[in-house]
Length: 178
Image 1 (cartoon, rainbow, N blue to C red):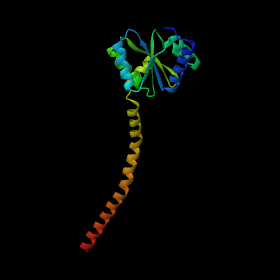
Image 2: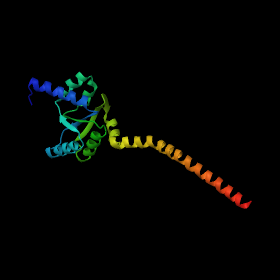
Image 3: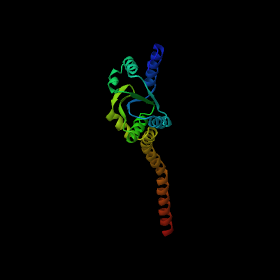
Image 4: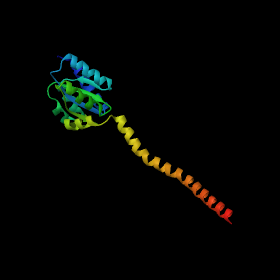
C-alpha cells in the first residue's frame, strides 16, 4: 500500500497522539485472522471503549523513536495491531479472552503510562478486575476504619446512657430497700 508523504506524517502524528493520550497501548500480532474474526474483535474492543488500529511498522517505529520509546519497536512482529485505552485492564483482558477463540491474535507487549511492558505483564493485567471494581475496593478499604470509628463514637453515648441507667436502677433499688 503506497502512502503519500502527507499521509505518512499524519499517520505518525496520529499514533503519537494516541500513545500519549492513552493510559495503555497494547501491541498484538494481527496475522492469520479472517475478516469475520477481525470484525468481531473490533466490535468487542469498541464495546469496551478501546480504539483498535493497524499502523505500518515503519511508520510506527518512527513514532516510537520520536516519543523515546524505541524499545517498544521490538514488540512489532509482522502485522501489528494497536489497542489504546484509558483503563489498563480492559485491552489485555479482551485480547487474551479473544485469543482463546482465535489463537492468531496474541499480545506482544505494550506501553503503560510511558513505560514498555512485556506480554507477561499484560497477562497479569488481564487477570485483574476492571478499574472501577479496583477503585471500589480501595474506597471500601479506606472506609472500613472510618465505619468502625463512627460505630465506636456512637457507642460511647449509648454506653454512658446504659451506665447511668444502671446507676439509677441501683439507687432506686437501694432507696426502696431502706
